[in-house]
Length: 285
Image (cartoon, rainbow, N blue to C red):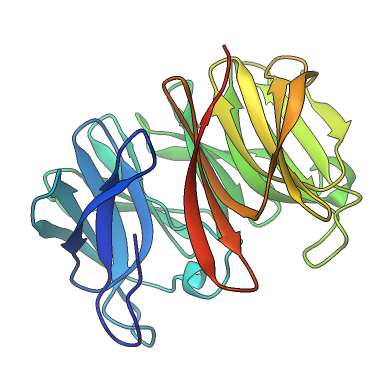
């Protein structure tokens, strides 16, 4: 997705498995988050940077966008790259983060969405084991889609080392969290925290992992971005956290990682020029 220039509306585009984007699809506003399922893309957007009206729209492949729901709230992701506003489709519902609230929107757009308040800023969320897992402030929260209830799995006062959780991913039966000692710090104190979905508190593991950043689950593996004077991708065993193979070095900063059949798509950002690139990586299984 692209946010456009100035007050201009943004666009979205399909990207094929080789990393090449297709034709742009015009949007109604400024896109803040994007998610997808097997047939549609789901886009969270605002009319302009100074408006608290938030909209969820959808598009089928290459077709026009249709607005299906609206909210009122703030989208810090427009100004803070650490915040995720990506909708998450699961079982006929699009789970949509807006500030400290997750709205559950039926794909049909009716009836009115129901809201689950998490109490703190939502930094990231993922789905695994039939549940929604959320970083809310400094806590890890589990949402049961069937009962529409939430449960704090690791509270701010119990999260290991008082760290700030940043990113979530699932690999095998485990939930993984990358966490740092605080935003703006050197990253040397970063950790990878994980637990088994069936026994979160009894299976908690903490691994010292300096400079860990974005993470992505890929079946039984976990991909971890690490950044010092350059960015690297490291594959870990999703059950034990042990490294698999050699790191993949990339020339620019990693923005996001998406597993695809036979490899990965990685978006990178070059700070000096503002250039963004989508890089396809073939990886052995």
